[in-house]
Image (cartoon, rainbow, N blue to C red):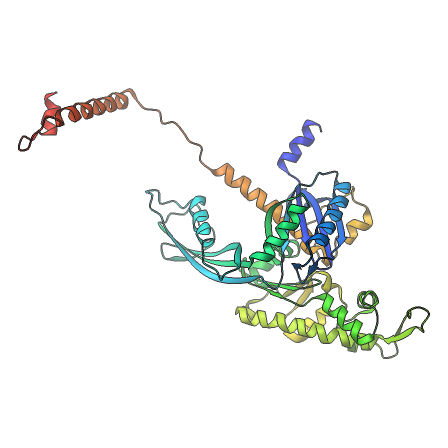
Length: 456
């Protein structure tokens, strides 16, 4: 490696994201490339066999899939992967709101990064129900000396700091199982990141987050919801329904194999039955020489629509529960593998009455000549929103830590004038003499310190 490339790597370190999903395990390797752009160096994808609804159910199978995806990513990027940023989801994820207060005791009334970190670290000491662990502590608004609505308190003058926090927790056993899979794969966890937070970094911009927007990430096992308003995350939820349950409905309703049901959903599926013609028919091969089966495209759409309506109703319930239903100028953004379903936007708008669009993670991807063109085009799909979001989130965390290191004050040695040095020596001398004479002071024989020092 020459000196120029080494300098580039120091400025833009290589970060790795690991998405442990229900249907796929994806490893993304990349680094910052200019302003708000990510250069992808390699991508590895493997089928996920040991995960159900975002929760690890088979350690050995999950480790095998992780190693397979890591090997592919290493081959493409020529990077030895050791540290990863891991996504976490599942029905066990919960969120609460809490308020923290910190009163500064030092004489400096300027709020520092250290004060905010102290306030955040206090939140990690909250007593949760048995078996739960805090994953994220996300500050919302701050109140400085009874002045509310402060978003960036560092550098402001104030003694009393109050803050509202959005705290995300998960089940300890499920978190440990994820970490055990990483350890068994000879990898190290840099950070556990809630998957809807990661997806939001890939498909939303700051204007949408400020205006008010709902991110809906429809994965294979779960549907993740995150609501933003005024640039702050306000509500998160994980719905234990995803694309896999739609596939199961097709398998049962059409009496076909699961693999055939998945193909039917992907190639011919629609979220609105009325958008399909009555006379359209799909021919599915039979088993072991049996006759082929004909399936109506419209009937297939009825099966899909019924389940998607249920998922959207759950999402709409979370929106109404958050209290931000009337403040969502940015509408709903759907991403994840389930977002590829035809006519889904129309169904969401019909049920919720809120404008909707599909979120693609290609906005932050820099042009790349090293990856094969078909693979790079595939990565622009909503299917990879979480994987790319984990990469972006990991890069942001690294840069924030670097910025924090740069602003820490370096210890300085105070230079003293000759007068100060002589004065300190006199004080030390007088203190020494006072200690000697104090031994000779008896009851009733007091020595006046000031007069004694004047005589000496």
